[in-house]
Amino acid sequence: MADTGLLIVFSGPSGAGKGTICEALRKNFPNVNYSISMTTRQPRVGEKDGVDYYFTSASEFETLLKKQAFLEYAKVYDHYYGTPKEHVYGLLAQGKHVLLEIDIQGAMQVRAQYPNCVCIYIVPPSLDILAKRLRERHTDTEEVICKRLHKTKEELQWISKYDYLIINNDLSQAIKEAIAIVQAEQCKVIRLQEKREKILNAY
Image (cartoon, rainbow, N blue to C red; front, top):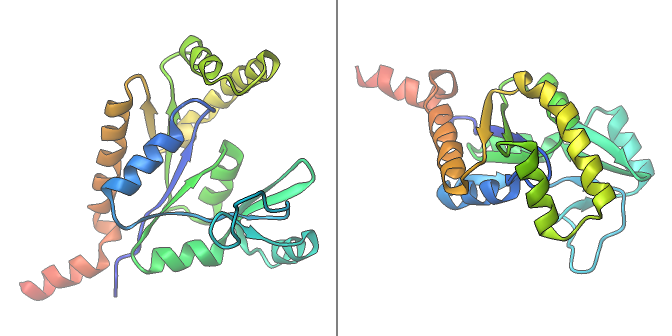
């Protein structure tokens, strides 16, 4: 029986570097996969069903909700977004790691349903540095940036609910820390049923 993969949950404010760090993990671990979310919004140009998202109707999504088919979900601007259990559990059963990049509310929903998940919070070293990064992206208005900064201050109260904290002051160091976390989690005895059996048989 193959060892179950890791369900790794990343949270943190916009501009913290979550996407870059997740992409680095994919390059360093060949068995790392992104989770594919399901949504009721319309596909954008270039998006493919089953690749970028699973696209579905609101009625079908609500039916799946009643069946408790999601690890986590949220409704944003009249559209549902959720992480289907079937897709994630299927990958984990094959020994593959699954990355989820979601907000704190979603992370806590995942933890409630899958307590063995690995939750990592990524944050810049200060609010000033975060503000600078957001402004340098030139993607948000000043009003939106101020709202993001206010939300970040509120969310920091949840850090104690996470397993690991990465302070992204230097991106290369933050990536090294994320890699080290995955390597350490892979070696936990509780996760290594197949290797435990091999060792017992070898002795």
